[in-house]
Amino acid sequence: MENKAFESDDGTQLKERIGHEGVGGSTGVRGRGPGLQGAEGQAEGKPPGLEGGKPAPNDAINLERRVGLLSGVALIVGTMIGSGIFVSPKGLLERTGSVALSLIVWAACGILSLLGALAYAELGTLVSESGGEYAYYLQGFSPKKVRHTWWAPIPAFLFAWVSVFLLKPSSLAIICLTCAEYFMRIFSVGSNGCLPPELSVKLFAATIIILITFINSYSVNLATRVQNIFTAAKLLAILIIVVGGVVKLAQGNTTHLAKGFEGSTSSFGDIATAFYSGLWAYDGWNNLNYVTEELKKPYTNLPRAIIIGLPLVTVCYLLVNVSYLAVMSTDELLASETVAVLFGEKLAGLPGVLTMVVAVAFSAFGAANGSSFTAGRLCFVAAREGHMVDVLSFVHTKKLTPSPALLFNASIALIMVIPSDIGSLIDFFSFTAWIFYGGAMTALLVMRYTMPDAPRPYKVPIIIPIIVLVISVYLVVGPIIDSPQIEYLYATLFIVAGLFFYFPFVHLKKALPGMGHVTTFFQLLLEVVPTDVMPDP
Image (cartoon, rainbow, N blue to C red; front, side, top):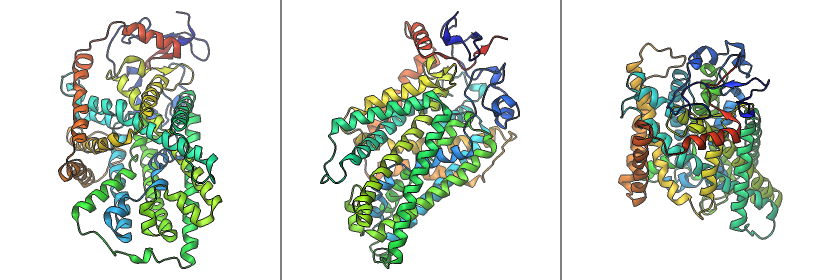
């Protein structure tokens, strides 16, 4: 068929393998093509094609390895540090009741996140596919010998169901709404605190989602450069806050920090919920595992990026909180919804306010870019396995980006921008993240038993995944027991609802009438092809 959608960079026609729903193909569920089984050697750059980024002449069309160590660190740090530390980091202080105890909890949450990330480093080097928890569930709970049973792929599918249709797009929508609000505040600084109209914020947020999706669809290199630049910008903003705090401490402003443990809570429940808030602030430490197939030398760069990124974020959180308390009182910090802006105002007046508003906007944009980057890969991998519609597993013929998956994530995020407040319900889904983290730890323990002799370039002590598993169970069960609310039931029902789609469309492999034509239409429109398409010799 003579069509640009099936034409490579040098003009050669692309030949589609059997097993794809699309032009000239038949409907079928597929996993990774046979041409991709040598991932271990390719990951370390042995074949010159993948190490240099471009596929070798006879390689399958697939995502390239273009994420280096620096970009990996930027992805972890840039998605972990969003707008929260600049806007409202009061949760821990409010629940612990004292300055010293809140700082201890901040540090402890960083250590716990590091433990979880180290366990994920073993998972990411043992299972070298992208998709994070999705790939680990497949390997741990549904290895090849039981992959075709009705029950084995359910954990992986439910994770993809919740993440692709709710958690990832809602996260992108919320971050972009914050980004839009602060970008618009840049033009209203000094206008007596007038806030931009809600409709304008939503339209700007939609524009940001479209821009970020274009960047990620156009080029992986461009997306990683954007991530690197905006991560550097937010670290510069944190440095400004820290330097300002150090100056105030040097001037003797230690009154608020000197309170120490004064007012500390004695309630174990309050401390537990403080940990919950802190761990949520650190969420994002697993994002690099979603792009393992695009990470250069993942067996060395994945652990290194984690070991660099997690302590860096922990130190940033601690120093920023100390700096806040060197400039403002605990009452001011608890009362403010824009802590960094208040900090800038107290430190340098109007220029300080403008600096902090720009910092929050840049930080949110970088976090949104990282969220879009990883969400697209999860959707791509799930579709490649047959757990989503086939076209979502296709990549652009020239750009080699998973543009259909990125566009799908953006479409749902745009819909979620419409409601006036999506955060209230989404908060109750945050506990599902720890269900999945606990599931990943369980998968790691299972694979220690079922794959004892598998090569493990990085291996953590067995106590680490056990600790993270116990904590994840508590963080899931604790809030429900402590404060049972109907929203938790809604979240659970949404998860279970995925089974109504799993059995007919995944297990029984049914297809809606006309899906082949829909796939063909988008394949031609977006100039995308399946990842196991080979160029003619």
